[in-house]
Length: 567
Image 1: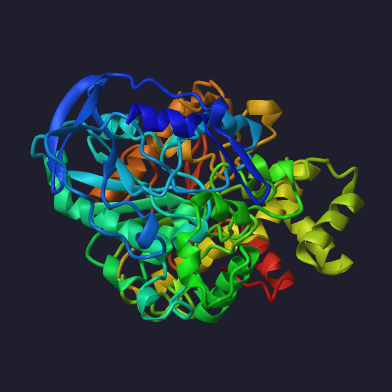
Image 2 (image 1 turned 60 degrees about the vertical axis):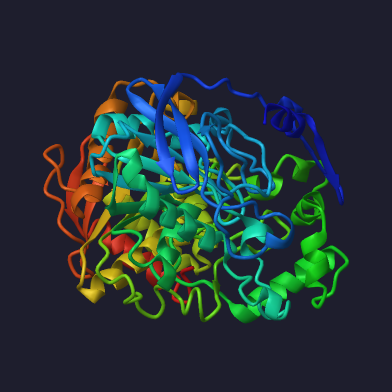
């Protein structure tokens, strides 16, 4: 195992202009001492004991997806004898790495990637039978990039502080996980659809069958994710095979109101195959190509060396998304990765025209950050020089006329009299994006079912890092939810105010995981969201429960964008 990992870390992947040099990747020495042993259906695993937490990393929940299993639904892992050390992170899915905003770069471990990537990580206070709530994290990166190995996603502090079991699932991404071949590949590829989502379902089946041996309760499972991970959470709400495998859902800064139609997905597959010199009827050949060649086709053709460092993600994205759309649709430049409405694994859009009734009884916690758009490395931080410049920027954002842009600015100025021109521009740009409208739409349509509560939040805490440049950026809430503010100082700084907010947010997420209700003694009373009252918890140094916050602003932006489509 050591030799194999060393080879992958030091090898250079080349193909169709792609050059990814892994020699700069530092292999982390696992910290802690050999810990508890737990039984899984495939064999025994041994974790590391780290400060009163048992950490199990890289546990296989599925077989390798290479060769004949590429693009196909996941299979059970090969069993092993003896005790398998679960000390190191497993492979990531093959991907084009993201260019991160500089503050997030130290938090990306960039662990090796490969097609034997169906593995998961478990953090638990103990393996003895305890029936703790289980919180299953689905990482961001759109459907194209990312992994559960990022420092901010480490579940040890959440497990230790709140006596829960945390699980992070690795699954296939981009073309490897979302190539739709059911209409191109004949009978052999009839089930080659939504492989990445089916991987997650297989991971949840592993939780159902094994988590009791890690001190967790398979009857109390919460799925939670951010950005693309929130899109995955949202999509699972409409997948028949996922029902019964989870009992609560949390969608942070992401949604999946609609998914890709099968016809468009077939065209996307054909376009990708064309980049590889293949026709639509050559799916068998596509399956045989080296992994590196498919990675080469994932990079954009106009960026050269920039693509080698992951610019296709960074140009649009940051640490955990692959697209500016809520839900993170995107494919690293060369492939449009998205769940596909195939009529079987995903029968129809989950939240369009109404919320799916499949998961009507699942409580939902959903929300967004104040300035989602400040995650983008191309964000315009130039302060508008005066009111006229601000109106012109808003006019471009909303694609509206001078009068309506002026009206919107006046409303925002009235509601936020202390905000700078730049702050107003960034907040309006966020409100005009699908990060905000997608989560709002899902909350409205889920609440309309009247079967389970919906809880809405807005994260408004501004980071002091970089002179406050990042503000309440997309992903800024993650360190607080995971109790990882000390691990993420490059993003959140080192101010004392971090701890109280982390305690309030993580306690709310855990209370929701335990009972389906996020209320706890550290917060004001948090009422369920309804389309008329729109109860919302504002997370900041002072947390506030508000009814229909910024109503006039929301309605003004909607009126300026009547044709906006939520995704």
